[in-house]
Length: 202
Image (cartoon, rainbow, N blue to C red; front, side, top):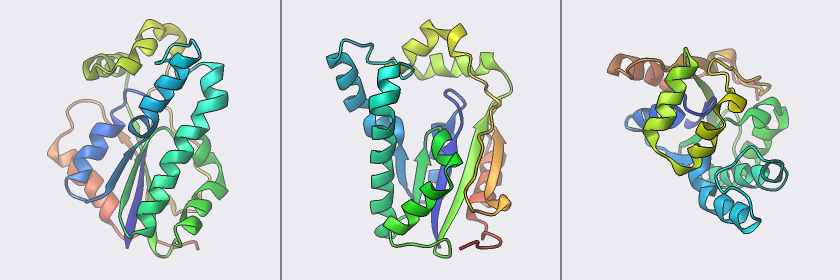
């Protein structure tokens, strides 16, 4: 059975790092939304006289946010249709709330819930300082806006998104990524990701 695994959570919790560790054990198309759309978004923001690293502006939310997510979704669909496992890395907050979104993805790929094991890993942290340290350590230009506006950024590191998809509860987990990402922790995630899903809903 194909795997479609979403690594969600707020910035700095380590979604990409966790996904990379799991990708060593589960071959998959690795779709980080920041990588898929980052260069285009930065160019468009700069062309409109805006901070190329500001993903919180009204302009970004109105004109670019869905463009990034929809492009990542399209690449996901192509890989699912080709028979590949797919890892999706981004907050996906609005998409997780939308029951029809995951149905549209599977349908467009010519797949069903019986053929694709959809799972969600919400990556969290225990405190804001750890989050800030990790954002600083990854040294990504697009994070500078977050650091310059840290008080207003006010990210809730333990935020768990609302998930309205028709997938079993056993296909959803919350992973506290505080401290070292040990082999034991990766093994636990691997067992969750590789386990056969219980109760196919469609």
